[in-house]
Amino acid sequence: MKRILHYGAKEITFTLAYQNRKSLGIKVRPDTTVCVLAPVDAKETDVLKKVKAKSPWILKQINHFNSFRPATPPRRFINGETHLYLGRQYRLKIIPDTVNVIKAYRGQLFIHSMNPTKGALEKQLQQWYRQKASIIFEEMLEEVLPKFKRYKIQKPTLVIRKMSKRWGSCTPAGKIILNTELIKAPKGSIEYVIIHELTHLVHRNHTKPFFDLLSRILPDWKKWKERLEYSLA
Image (cartoon, rainbow, N blue to C red; front, side, top):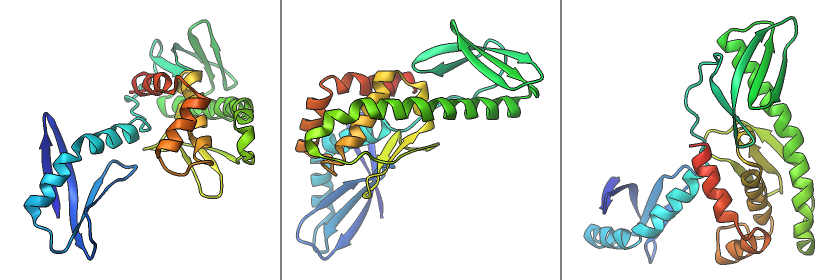
């Protein structure tokens, strides 16, 4: 059953299910959906009161997961259009050529292309982003990994791929997956995501110990998290 709750100017949509349990349970999933599990004998009015009391926490969790969700505006791939790379805006300079080469130089992104059509340019730029991400993300992982030396974690396998809802994730087997789109963010924000995922190798969930360790390793993580949210919004 879907329910809608208003908390100030915010609207919280959640699913409500009844189970054989003793207390109310609220889950906010990474895709920002909210699920409320209530005891079978609970009155709906009481459930809604409890959910409303937890609204600040629910909204905080939703904002947290939203910070990992890329939101890139549609691109036309024309001369003069700006594209991000490592937190900076670069203007496209499209050059018909006999080779496919991309160079970032002095605020411009020179795209030499054998087929300067929108689809081909988009594919070429995405390949370039991925190549850069493979190099830079691996270098940054090597740089920050020693900060976790006392926790004796093994160097994780790094996977880079396009993701629609997350900037990064960590598997139970210790594999770290980073979104290719992160290459558009400032280096400090990329470092934040890598450290965030490495912290999950020590503390699986977003508990107080998790955030305590994150703050010890990267004291200004909130600043870089905000930069990530706003620079790629």
